[in-house]
Length: 151
Image: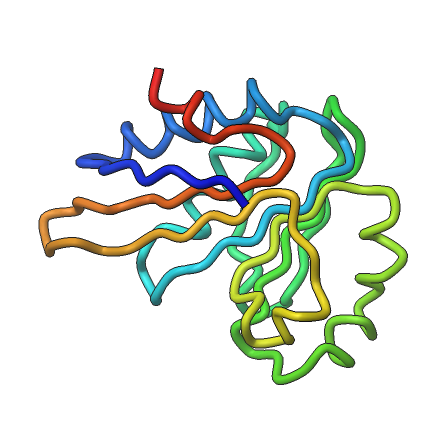
């Protein structure tokens, strides 16, 4: 996978990065893995992505229900939070296999359900750098060169 690392100094910087990424990869069927420690910004990334897709309704964190689905201008998008899951079987019980064949997916904590079994079109890792909100965002993909996000 090709990758790029981008330093983000504000939430607006994350919003701008998501907007650029959306313009590059705004197809209906896309699987995005979101990685990072608690509070890194995975759900915030997902919110900005869904807003870019045209979602007008409130976008909630799927931490407790594990899954929220949204109808967008680019078809269905499903936002999974796998923090509380402990295996691929639990993800499949939520209908992941059927969804992944046709709809867009934002998947937080993919490592909790087995990295090897899940293929992502885009990998996003968000690392907290300091307590002042600075983050390093690493975007990886085989489908496009993430370096275009630097422009």
